[in-house]
Every structure is written in C-alpha cells, then in structure tokens.
Length: 162
Image (cartoon, rainbow, N blue to C red):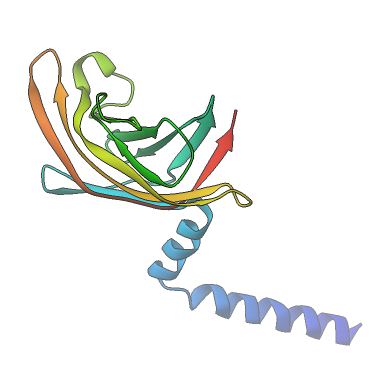
C-alpha cells in the first residue's frame, strides 16, 4: 500500500513540475499543433486567429479564422489541391476572400476581395490538414472603402468534409 501511495505521489509531483515548467509559448505551441494557426496584416496591423478551421464541400474548400474583437477572414478555393487560386474571376483557378469587421453583421462590415490570391502550399489528406498563404485587397461595396490584407499565412489548419 505504501508503494502505491508513494508511486502515485511521485507521479503527481512529476506531472505538477512538468505543467508548471511550461512557458506561455509552450502552451501556445501545443494549442497551435492541435488547431493550426492563421495570421495576416490588415492595413498593416497584426491580425491573428484563435482556432482557425476549414470546410471541404462540393469540391471547394473555405478556411476561416476569427480573431478577438469579432474580426474574421475567409479564404476559399475552387478545389482542394496545392496551387494558386486567383481572386480575379477571369483568371482560373478561382478563389475568394472576405474580411469582416463584425462576424454577425455582413451588411455593414463585410469587405469582398477583388484582387489577390490564396496559395495552398500543402494538403495532408490523411490528417485532414492544410497550409498556405494569402493576400488580397477588399472593398466594402456600399461605401467603396477598401482594406489591404497582406502577409496572410495559415499553417496546419484542420479541415472537415461535408
């Protein structure tokens, strides 16, 4: 009995030391390895998503990231294959992009990409993960205000099939 109590106490102590020895970066790296990462610059300001995800449906894929403050970015492609997808409908293969200031208010806060691209650099079909880069200029159609989304990068984002 003493041996079991000692083993349990020792195991708990080792686990506690291991947990408290983790830095904030270690925890963030662990979370990123599960959910992937997505980041960009919006008009030169850093933007980063917590828990990006993608959906593959009807031969196309859309990746979405939501940042604090309700800002979201969506990039999509007309296929799930590595390659460059243009946000110009006259230049296939076609992709698309959106930037929203408020996730639940597309009428007054949605900017639609009119120039740019989404480059899928890696697809891991067995793990259902993808990586890539993106950049685009987008317009808020009612006001013609524009934003520039640059240095967009997604790494190891999970995707589901529907």
